[in-house]
Length: 101
Image (cartoon, rainbow, N blue to C red; front, side, top):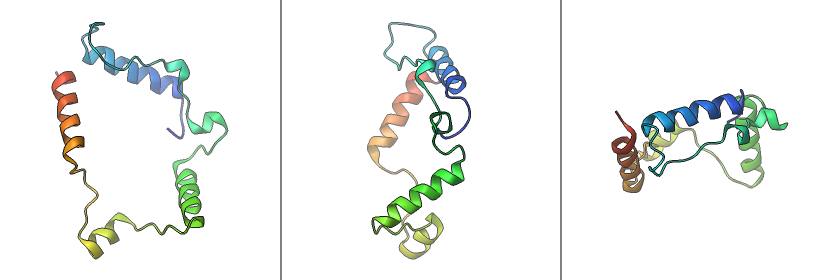
């Protein structure tokens, strides 16, 4: 998280998990503590996504890594950045089954 209030976002996340679990404390789900969450901007880092992204591009560029925009990557190689890893898809399905109403 780059900008905004970490505590407020943490409250939303905690509320999501509590609602999704039906407030059943016996279920195994993340116990979010909003007071421990902060945005980078709140911690003295960049407070805008564009500034953060530029910093990442600059840092990896200094290490000789060349980033390719998704559109050009797809055009040049046919590779799509959609999640297709079966482990990711299985985890997403498990979470939907566990928490969806």
